[in-house]
Each structure stands twice: as C-alpha cells, then as structure tokens.
View 1 (tube, helix red, strand yellow):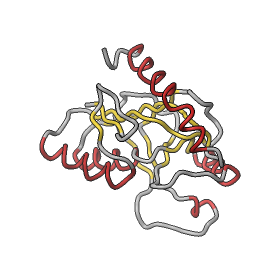
View 2: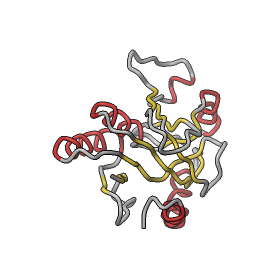
View 3: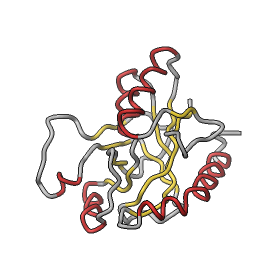
View 4: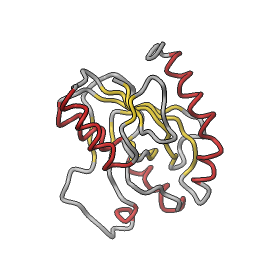
Length: 178
C-alpha cells in the first residue's frame, strides 16, 4: 500500500493519511485496523538539512522525532526517538526527522547531519511507529523541495509541482507504480 500526506500532496496511486504526526498516526492506525496492508510505502516531499539538493530523491527505512531544542541540549525525552524498519524495500541512506514544525533556522538545523539525519518530513516518524505496532514492513521515498532555512515555505511552494512530477517519474522508473 502506498500512502502520502494529503491536502496539497496527493497522488492518484496513493492513499492520503493526513498532515503531521497526529493526523497521519490516527488515520493510518484506523486504516490498519480495518484493512491491514502487507507492506507500507510512504511517499512525499522533504526539506534538506544541507546534504541533499532540491529535487534529489531519498529512500529511507529510518525516522526520528528529534526537536531543534535537542540540538541545543535544551530538552530530552524518555521515548524512543529513532525507529528503523527491518525490511529491505529501499536503500537506507539517511534518517528522516519528523515534527509538526518546519525548520527554518539553517544554522541550527544543519546540525542534524551530525546524527545521520539528512532530511525532514512531517509524517514519516508516525508512519514508522504505526507500522511497527502492526508489524508491517515500511519504507519511505522522498523528493527534496527545499532547504530548512528562512525561505523554506516559499521554496516548497515554488518547487512542489515539479518535485511531485519527479517523484512520480522515479516511482514509474523503479516499477513501483504503473
């Protein structure tokens, strides 16, 4: 089963599950309870912490939920904040960080790279968490739309249509969709 965030990021071949950590967790859980898929593939856009360029495609099986305050040693969590799927559906190039907030401080957010975290996508951590709970193999394929800087939203908006087209072409080329 292919899933995506929704709202302005939808695909005719993917089921929208909602934007952010909460909507995606609730809606994906509901779907898994009533129609559990054998495999989950999340597709969508992501912001780069600096090691990936706009329109790069990134595959991952790992996600984190690490807030910017952690990078300044201003917070901690007793929860597991990095998850990894055991499957081998995709390469495991980088960890995808998820938060309900979009990073706009490039000087701070580029420090995620020190932890092997290369990109951010609002939903992927919750997708991995739900998949883990239901014992479903999961992976993600992302297209970079912007850097995590003060222009993040404008660049996302400007690049979104082209990025979605390139992501679809990638999925077609890899024969993930027809």
